[in-house]
Length: 539
Ligand code: PEP
Ligand code: MG
Image 1 (cartoon, rainbow, N blue to C red):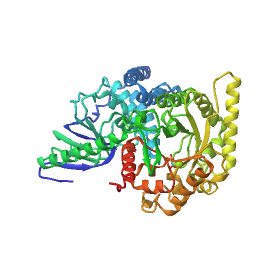
Image 2: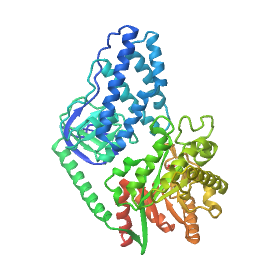
Image 3: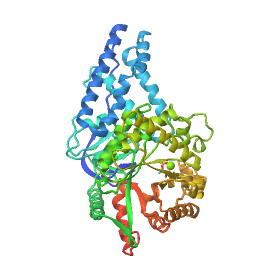
């Protein structure tokens, strides 16, 4: 899209907000000529060596990056250690394939599987695999696999950028990321958000050249070689963003939010420890929802008890005495997990998912319950079950959990049963709320709206109908809040509408006093409550 005499502007999707004006640098991987293959033995040795070198490089990167970034790289290391996976590749070399050909075709197969997934989260995993494929091939072709030199503060542009390449770039002088493809749910997007690096994805085709660029992570635009007028407008947007962030963040530092004299608790939703790196997370009253499906899909398999315990314990340590609500695996529907969810269902959204699936696969559920029971003694942990329809399911889950605690204690392992609550996201649960003996309720308005309105939440064509402010949805929210008030049981809402300032008046009027929002929305929601309290509008 031509927008001015001098500069070209492109629009994509926001992956991480913020503004960058800097040199424009393309970092696409160059394709070298195919290598000359050796004998079968030479090819097998070349691949083994390339895998060892790649493993060492990734381990070094993980050691420097630490934390959640290191966990992301573990996915690649795990694949390089997976002898079953490698066996087939060495067999192909035994059948006469060159090392790079055998490696590429195995990785391309896996990448295609991830790419064809409907779930955007799974799709995004394919860039991790493409990164690994290219790293090993680069080593086989005699490359060093090292990062290109990038000037500080640059707008780095690539087709897609895998996490390991992101971590190799020195972001200490700032800079931003503009991807032609990519996804806001990819690991690299999570890393960019955690480090405050502005990032725009899905920009489409743009020219190879450009000396300077303006990247606007909020408006999701990239402008190349901008005119003076483009630069002036960009700086005005940057300044207004800075001012509104500064005033929202000043409010964030105040201890509590209140509305009509009542305290409003604001907690945050996280998928992993990486989300806690968000600068605003520290101001939350706790974690209102930790989704644990991230653990299932990230490592290419079902995580063992220690890996899970480590993740839960890290969040509890971060929270100190603040409450942390962890939701048990909510796989199925829009979150398929290979080896766990069923792939023979005509309608997975109405299928064996959430708690239904966990109860059907007790051998997998028990591992999570063990990790949670052990974590419960380390902090203020609450656990909730997703997709609960009937009180019997809650009781079946509670029994499994209690048995798990007993077994752990009999083994001499410190463990306890945490407070147990449920997500209210199936209309039947909201309507029959009084039948549940739960310690707390958390309304999942994303699914509640989907089921009440009969609109698949992932179907963009239904977006105008998929309105969480529909009176039928609000009626069920108000009903749940009213039951909680009468029964003295806390009720919060952790669906996306809690992060949307436009929904706030309706949610407060429904009687909710506890909301769990995305960390990036915390300041704005607190500011909106402040405005509503002082009689102002939404601003
Ligand atoms: C919800 O359904 O509102 C919710 C918070 O859970 P998820 O979006 O993970 O289904
Ligand atoms: Mg849900």
